[in-house]
Length: 491
Image (spheres, rainbow, N blue to C red):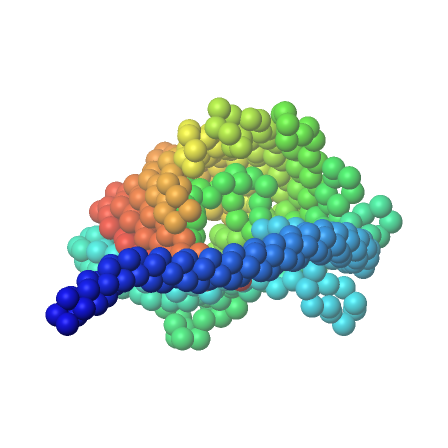
């Protein structure tokens, strides 16, 4: 019995020992089959993903090709539109030129609103505010010509002044009438508000500034020739200093003003070599100083201005050349000019009633390096008050002699950047002492410095500092330090 049980137990153990490996192998095989199936599914999914990716990539390539074709078509369309626009603008430009528009960059004649007569008008101008302080008294507070004698009679020593004004605000217009025959006809009209009664500054309220005519002329351009009639700048001594915007250092070394005149101008040469110009003008003597030396003299109840009474205009002649300098894009300019005219009084002065006014002048501009230049102007002549020389003195009514004078100005200016520039210089007007009567002005000179700031969009500001000295024949001299600051917009 016990042997039978023992055999049964042994047989069971043998069955278990030999059956377990078979079960384990069967389970492992099933797992391998499942893994193979899962791998097959993953492979199929990867294949589908790769196929889809290839399709997407192909679509992207196709889109890029289409975009490239569209870009080419767009560029071609834009170029076509540009060509059409340019052709239209050229046609409009030609039509405008025929009707009266001839745009010139930088304040020239240009298209704009159309006048009643059908010709184009271009408006321009400047709005300017300035304030000045002087530590001594000038003859004119806003528009000074010389320092008063500090003798306790005309002025006390160091009698300071202060002023603010907007008189140098300007308004102007250009017009072009197109062609009349072979001539291109243009015109200019310009005003500011610096007009004074009787050449004085204290005769009116500063808030009631008076309009003053600056320029008013018509110009006929025929090839290299220009014929101009109306009020324009003298062709004598064409340069102006950087400081003293109100008066350009007139009566202190700088000649040349505006007046009614007729002139002819010829320009030759070219910008790639030596260029030159020659100009001739006839102008109104007495248009600037309005001199009537015999007012209060003689037996006439009324007298006439001496330039008008001469019965003739004065003559001006100018010539100049310009050529390339060592500074890229900058040219050296050299000029010479002169004027000759007559004055006549109703009263004899020391037996004389006819007087001659004449002047000779040179001017030069020399670039030094990029943005920097020097310029200078010098003169000699007699009876020059009408040309802003002789410190506004032309005739010595005691001796019957014209007053000789000589002078000029020279300055350095450096535009260091688009924003900032500065300069300094000196000027002098020096009448011949032997031609002067007691207490007349014997010398008028300055030393000056200037700073300019360009803020963009037509906004500018600046500062002028001028040391000014006026000497007299047998009278105390006067000297002053004048500081002027301004801000302006140009349009």
